[in-house]
Every structure is written in C-alpha cells, then in structure tokens.
Image (cartoon, rainbow, N blue to C red; front, side, top):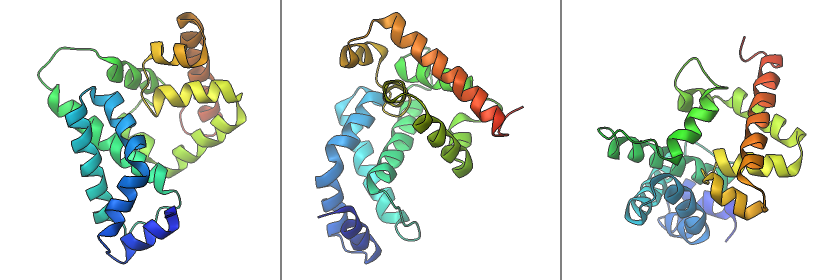
Length: 185
C-alpha cells in the first residue's frame, strides 16, 4: 500500500490506516526514537504514540509526505519523552549535544518551536539541497536522525575530527544563509 492510500485510510477514519502506516514505517520510526531515547521499550511506546497522533491529526492535516510526517511526530514524541525521563538528571547525552549545536544557529527562543516554522523549514531545506550531498547527508544524520558522531564516522568512513569540522562548517554556512534570507539578525 502506498502513502496516498494510507493517508486516504486516515481521512476515512479506517483503523487499517494505523496498521498499514506501522507496517510500512515502523523500522524508520524506531530508528529515530531509539537514537533519541536509547531504550527500546520507550522507543516502541513513542512510535505507538506518534501513530496515535497521526490518527488524531489526519484530518485536518493532509501530509504530502507520510514518511516525513511520521518522522516528525516520532521526533517530537521522543524528545518530549527524553526531557520527561531526564528532567532531574544532570547528564549531557548525544541528543542534548545535537540540540545545543543546532541551537547556536536557531537562537532566540525554544529550538523545537522555531524549527517548526514552515518558512524556516523551507529555507533550511533549500540550503541543504544547495550543498554537497555528503555534507547534506552528514548534517541530516546528525540533526534529523540524531546519529552519534561515532556512528556517522563509521557510516561514511571519516575520522571524528573531519565529521565534527564538516558539521561546524555546515552549521556556520546555514547560519549565514538564514541571515541572508532574513531569519536572523
């Protein structure tokens, strides 16, 4: 079953929509949730919560890309779960480092709220598609999938310093691009 058919099932309030979406995108969603939470049981709960959110939000939302829509819901759910689980702990895991790195660019408010803006998201997408594919993929692995730097190094065969420098330069270039686009002064 393709995405349009699954979205149509959601619109019709057909309960098969959830099972079809889960069948098609469970591994993708689990990957994202597990990278944030590092706990399989919590990740499974987040995936189920995200599917429930999809059920509750389609309609009125009508996602053009179901995979991205579900990925966004899972990320939000996992980040909220992570914050709730670690509210009292003084730890600095990979997810916090990742959010801190991107917050350097998107400062002046809550990072998650700012990134949700459609115009800003579109500008970031334009920027990413204007850069080298490898740099884009490394950036997406780090800030969309929350892959640890070591995992990115392994995936692309790069040393840690190369990945860190690539991420820094891409963040700097993105910040400059967003300033030119009028998002930040």
